[in-house]
Amino acid sequence: MHPIKDLLTLYFVMGSPNCKENPRHVLREAIEGGITLFQYREKGIDCLADRDKVELAKDLQGICREFNVPFIVNDDVDLAIELDADGVHIGQEDISIEDVRKRIGNKIIGVSAHSIEEALIAIDKGADYLGVGPMYATATKLDARKVQGPQLIRKMREASITIPIVGIGGITQSTVTEVINNGADGVAIISAISQSNFPKIATQDIMLKIK
Image 1: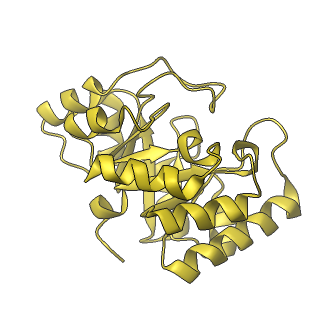
Image 2: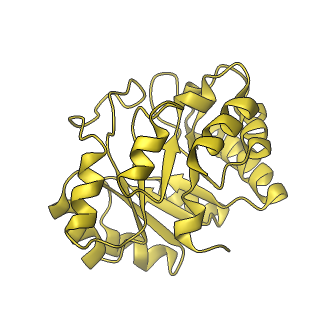
């Protein structure tokens, strides 16, 4: 597997409520467009539950494996273990980093951070990367924190925080460069890909802005 910093370059986050088309089709298109990492985040209105959630996860993981794209599960450690996923991403209100590490061993753990203090705590407890945001206003996460803007990543870098960081929250093709220029190793994208009529082209356009 590539170093985590490289995996974060274009990090696609998605579940069925985020997609205009079948999520399996959207993921294939996004992979063909160049995403480097995928996170299964089955949350929000009309999200799948129980076996339906697991079956979609298995299908999406299968697509990721077909193309050698690592597969991360949002919050649900039990599901990650059941699927032997490549890692877990947790928020500040979720299970503790220590508990996740005990359960998944040396797999990837990503942690959401909204301040320098949260970032330092996550690093101390063993996070492999930080998801910092929200960068901009977003409708995807109904309980989203106050918009931080890319300057928060710059402040983290100025505070000598060197851990891999991905910016997340409301990032579009037109704001990718600003996030990267403030010190992010990559961008996490939801709607700009999942809501596109042409996910592959949308992904390619975003990747061009990163490189």
